[in-house]
Every structure is written in structure tokens, then in C-alpha cells.
Image (cartoon, rainbow, N blue to C red; front, side, top):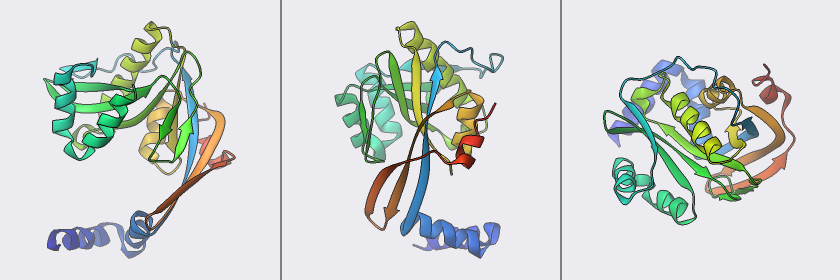
Length: 216
């Protein structure tokens, strides 16, 4: 309790009372997010070929040993991981010198996302990427970019042509990340709402300001 209070006080000192209070309301009372659905051709050249990270190895998490490593590293997400795996989704993991530092999940069929209460329709020869994560200490480095480049190349080699992703217009880091990888809006969008413990979503028209972030 004292630690949480100290964190809030530090947030107020760093960000000011207004922004801190708005974040508290967004996190715990009411939130509205506008999401665009993005697409990218898997055969489009990756725009940052010279990027590299020493020791980074990317692979599909397809063995019990790999899956156990994923669950041990992120124990609070084990239930979701197990559900994804049982439903046929694939985890792609990135490791640096053997340590797990990033992951992303891939669906090759229609996928119901319990987080956003929506079903994403996945066309033949298309994949849907979701729940991507990079450890905080590696953010700002090209780990996520290189993992997604590996995903695009690997699934294109399996005969897939396009990928989908849903990105919140309020998530600046994710918007920049997908824009760098040359994802483009596919014309679909939705709004996600949360009021206390109640959540819902509805189909929406893409907002002009959200679309502008992906102009080339």
C-alpha cells in the first residue's frame, strides 16, 4: 500500500496533478479507446534491413520446453497463454543469449479476442497478430521490429500473404511501431469502452486523426 501511494506521488511530481488524475480515471473508472485494424503484405520488403541485435534468436514456441519458459517468465499470463495454445494459436518468442525478452501471438483462423470482446475475421492465407510484448528494458531497441520481421518472413514462407493487427490510436508506441513496419489501415475500426468492471465494444468508422498516423 505504501509503495503504491509513493508511486502515485512520484507520478504527480513528474507529470502533474491533471495528467495523473486523468490516467487514474482511465485505468480504474472509465476508458474509451479507438482502434484501427491494420494490414500489411508479407512479401513487402522490411524497411530496416540493417538493424540487428547481437544474440537475438527468434523462433516459434512449439515445444513443451519453450512453452514452459514462456509461462515461467510471465506467470500472471499463463491462463491466457494456455487458452491461446489450446485454440491453435502460435506464440513466437525472441531470446537474447537464451533469455526470453519478447513474444507475439499469431492466429491463422478467425480469432475471438476476449480482451476487446470482438471476433477478428481472418481470411484465407492471412494471419492475425496479437498480444505482442517486449520487456521494458529492451524497449527503444529494435527487438519488436526484428521479431515481427521474422514473423512476416516465416509465415510468408508457409504460403500466407497478409497480416492483420488492431492498434489503439492512444498507444503512441504501438502506432509508431506499426507505422515503421508500413502497416496501413484496412478500413475497419472499433471503439472499446470500460466503465468500472463493465466492458463493451462497438464497430466504428476510422477516425481521421488516427488514419493520419499511417500516411506515407
